[in-house]
Image 1: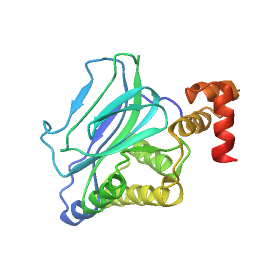
Image 2: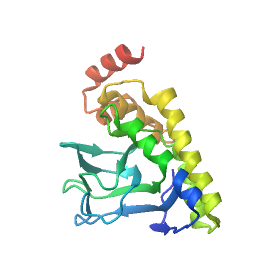
Image 3: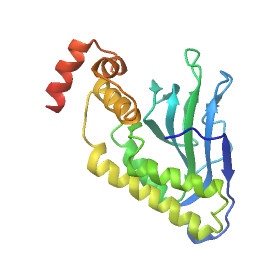
Length: 220
């Protein structure tokens, strides 16, 4: 996944039927380096909207449900824009690069409920997973100014939600220790580099011995 220029694209479609199903409000790619970057829920004017935000590189953080979650490459969240949360660039991180999409509509709302019902708000996805590849396609269309009407935008939004549902069904319900998830995501996001067991153990925050033993136990 190559780096992109910072861009945010906003849409204000009025067709009622598309707003009821699924619609795009905004999509963007950002690389935050200022520790003043700090978004809080309940204080935002928008409502009935949902943000999906995927970390490309660097480290971000989100406070949600009384817990603080570290957001490294491959981790994403899907939140109701009006709920209580805070996502920000933590003091220990030099940058946080991410791609996001803000959506609304009943289909989006149901998807948010589906992903939050197990109280696991952080989603793990490889950069080549179908939801992320579809998100990148939407972003490129926006950047190329090829999202031209409400019906096209609604179709793109709906397809993205369906990709998330399929991901959750096929992969997302598999429960793995966070250390192993971090290691596998690291490998998936750096497959083009000569990484080894030491690198994966470091990504898992484990010694090589403990990482190898746990990896074999969990994944065979």
